Structures are given as C-alpha cells and as structure tokens.
Picture 1: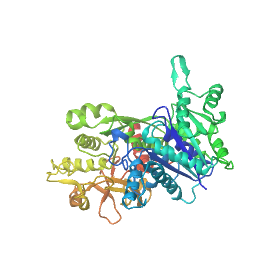
Picture 2: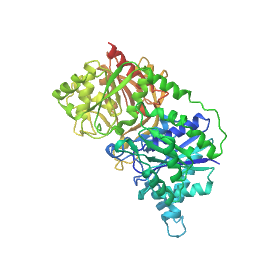
Picture 3: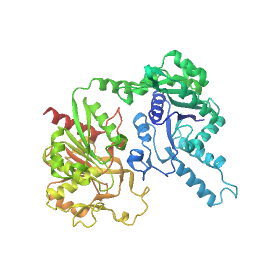
Picture 4: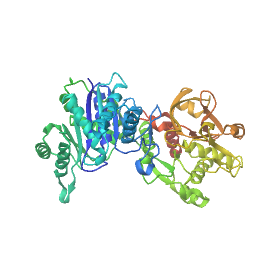
Length: 538
C-alpha cells in the first residue's frame, strides 16, 4: 500500500506549504523512497493556463502539456518525482468530471452531492496519481488554500476520509502554521492553536506541525504547542526565516529530524540518508565570488512569482559558475522609445539581458528595443519564447530594414509578419490548453551555441506558445546573417536562433527554465551566466 502525507496550511497564506512539501519529498528521496507529489488547488479554473501571472504567478508546464500551478515547479526543482497532468488537481477539474458523469447517467439517477461524489472524485484522482508510477512509495498531497476557506473544505474532507480508510500508519496529516512575533520579540502560539482547532473541527488531527517563525522555536515553546495541539513534542518543527536560499530548507528539516519522525509514524524502516547533492549545493553557494547583474526585461515585473522558474534557473546557473546573480527587474514599457532605452539600459551596467515569455502587446516594442540594445552593444542576451520572437522582429526591422515587421499577434496588418500563427491555430477560439504544449524534440545545427551548451544535437524541451517563426522568411533572415540554429526533427519549425559576431546572443522557442535544478543547472542558463561573467570580468 502507498503511504500518503497530506500537507495543509493555516492562519494565513504564503507560509511556504509548497516549499515545505517539496523539502519533505527531497528528504524522503534521500532516504531511498520513491515520491509522488500532488497539488490540490481549490480554484474553479480547470487549470492555470488562462490565469493572469498577476493573479497566480507563472504557469508551470509538464512534459505531457499540463498547465499547472507554480508549486509543481518547486516539486520539480526539489525532487526527481515525475510530474504530469495527474499531479495537478483543481476544483474545476473535479466538478467538470462529476457533471460529465451525471450527464452520462453514471450515477443511476441519484442526487449528486459534494459528499460522496465530489470527495470520491478527489480521492480517485489522488490514487490515480499514485498509480502513474508503480514504484511510488509515498504520495505527498499539498492542499492549497488555508483551513477555514470554504473552497478547501471538499479537499480536506477527502483527506480525512483517506486518513480514516488507510489508517494512521499509512496516512499522515502535516499542518503548516504561523508563529507571529509581537512587540518585544514575543512569539505567540495562539494562532497555531486556533488553526489546529479548525483542523480538528474538520475531523483531522494533525500528526506533525511545521511552524513558520522568525527564529528557531525553543523547547518550552514546542512543548506548549504540543500540549495544546495534541501532538507529540518531537513532531513540532520550525520553518524559520533564512537569509540564504529556500534550498537550505531540506537540510534545516533534516537537522530537526523531520524525516525520521515521518518514517517512524508511517512504520517505515529508517534508511541511511544521502543528501550529498544538497550539501554540495550549499558549499557552492558559500564559495561564490563576484556578482553578475542580469537585466530581466518583461511585462509582469511587479510580481516575483510571474517569472519564478526563470529566476530560480538563473540562481542555479550562478551556483554552477561560482558567482552571485543579481536580478535587475526592468519593466519593458518605458523602453518603447529611444530616450527610455538610453536612460534605462545605458545606466544600469548589466552584464546580460534576458527577455522571458509572455502574451499580449503591452511592452513588446520595449522588449524589441532591449534585444537591439544587447545585440548592438555586444551584451550577452538570452531570449525565451517571446524573447526569441522579439529577436526576430528586431532583426527584421533594424538589419533587413522592414520597419513595420512584427508578429501577427500584435499587428495583423503588417506587411512582414515574421512571427505568425500555425495554420492549425488560425481558427482556435478556446484558449485553454490549445497551444503547442509540453515536451517536443529539437535538433541543433553544427557549430552553434545551443549545440555547445547541450553537448548533443537531439534535445527535448517543453513548449507553451501559439506563434512561430514564419517559415517564408527563413531565406532572407539567413542571408542577412541570422543563424537558425535548431529545428524540429522534421525541419518544419525554427526552434532556436543566434546572432552572428556576438559573444552570446541566443533565443529559443521553448521554456528551458522548467528543467533546471539547484543541483543541476540547465545548460543554456549555465552558458548564459558564463558569458555574462566573462563580460563582467572584461
């Protein structure tokens, strides 16, 4: 039987449930167990694909093309657990499935209700995710939202039922709460007590508490929490504020013996812990020397989570190159005129420019100007998805002289639509999950930066876009010097372009940030930061 761990949160949001669940997964993998990670999101959207980055941060894409919550990105960076659409469960998916079954007469005329029909659907999806990999030992289920939220009630009820059905040794409740600090530095445990009480009212007695606090809780505070929350003192852990990186959290939990307590409560024989990769990563962090400044030119700069995987991949690449990466966030809108470019980019002293993905016309000309500035000033440049497309637009406008060159996404009347829709996308009206999504193959050309980065010609990366390099312009672009450096295996689509006579100017149509890890930086990010480091040293 699989073991299940349900991770919930209380008091307030943004306490770090995703990082805590991911860290626990990393520890259990370090003990030799195979982990499956599942996220339950209470929102009614079927998936995160149509949600604004301002609303919910980035959309994380899996190999099979699922558009999911950004917490799956944390799962991918902390663990080696395989991720697919089965690992992301939303209220929208659950209700859609139940309503379809009702319309098909699958409930034999019965009145369809939250209990048992909605909760049964949730449970069946959790167990289905566990069966995706037959070698799964432990399933960690993160329940989004906060206990007390009306949206989370069906998921918590499904968790209660599974804990009852599987038995306490096969299903645990891990509850994350807040220990706030009030005047004079006093830590208050009452919010945690109320949060656990709310869980108990739902019929769930937490087995383990992870308390988010400004500092490590002392023994007396832990004993007080244990007494009033009806948990073992050894099962009260602290997730305290750190000034290094979230990737230290697995080691912080390991020092507090979180994995040992979990294994003991689940009746799993304790195994030797192998966390060498995490200790090596922290060693690299502490040995970093120097700083490179990377300008991120985008349209969602106010919210850090909008480009979460990009920022993390840059951090990983900094570890690999032994330098700290300073993120310089640049709103692309002020760069839409020459004065804005000069006043902004010329004064920031950045060692590299990265333009990430995005949708919509806002700030596009600013991104195009940023690409031109990096090209003409020989500044290392990395374009991802839309970042590659603005490279093409810049080349068409300022090298080929086609002043109105544009993407048909932004200007349908342009005489030079150098970026355009695929034919099979022309009539698409339903925007949910209809893009080129998920894992696709590419073939790198000889003598290119992308081939040097990967070390092999055949590569696989994840896509999320509708618009492509327009094939009718291949010949003119190439004759003007633009390198078309990677294509789909059938040669039908351009996947990567590079600037000639430039230290490192590369754009890809896919999203490499989704496959970067702190213990294994993505090769394109690694080489981009290496080029920026060289520029800084020069």
